[in-house]
Length: 427
Image 1: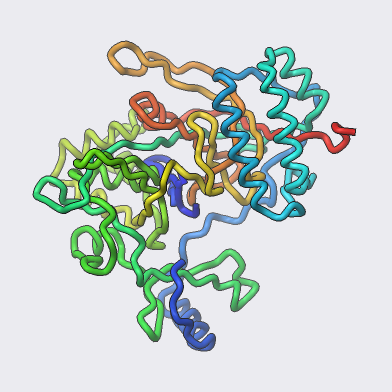
Image 2: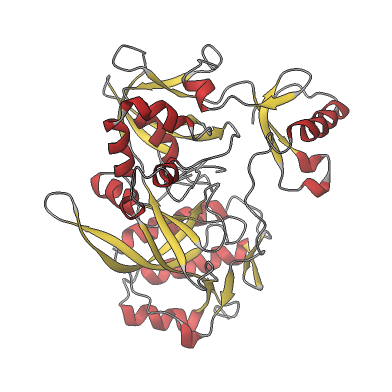
């Protein structure tokens, strides 16, 4: 899931984090002094953790002789919806905005033409052979350079949880979903020094200085936000709240029969630390057994450790209400099985992609029977703060039992391609 430390969505293992308020502006010299003295005395503590520097593009163009077989394991209705959501985003931005595919660049106007051309074609419900012929004749194809194993991408998954909640606090509903606090402040440092491009501070503006925002322990166990922000709703279980923050969005079924769609709004700026990695490193869950379900089971079986384990991750997510959902980084609705989260610095936003990896097959008892190879077209519509580099991808599975199982267990290698219409295809 979700912007941005989103939708999005943070992951349990490997660490994936999924994640403006207008205030009176202080004089610029105060802000500059704050920044430099903060850096001098606090090191990098105030900075939102930035991923390591990587190449400007994660794609290389491949020859048509190296194209994979373009088979798709899903029906075309969901693909049409995903393509239309990308077109919706592309129509909102300047037509001359450029998108990088390896060494090539295409503007938003061409991206729209490419999407519309592909949409017209899939509405004919083509066969695998027709797909291959269409792409070879009309499209340029680029492959992700992948991780240290060239061309290989590590796939995980996320989903939209459904939880019971209440608009009122009670002995049953005790754990709040917080809205963005009014004292949460974000400073884009590149506005003051160009060499700090990509750097920003997330903290609290106290009138004379900016200090780090409250961490998870401050918020959940010390009551730091009581009376300082709105409680959107209340949940029964602290662990459910934690995993809602990991996924970045969810449906809250209220006890008055209404449904709230809650979505990532902001992060406290504290570094994300994976509790899954913590449980592996401390020998509490074997690496080969790691899943979201295993983490949940361990926490429920060891209530005396919950506070220590959850507080290991100081990052905290604040939410907002949407009319529908879930919404990805591009502010369009995600499509189950078709929306994917990638490093937004390396891959063209809204772009049409094609993946090959593995999915779980579930038996009658709701357990994973085996993992099966699959391939499908997807859209690059989301991101995550720790979805870093050309070798990481996070697939949105939707909601429901299967989506939860798939998202909770998916940790598989695969390959990732991007497609775009040849410039002369319409001539």
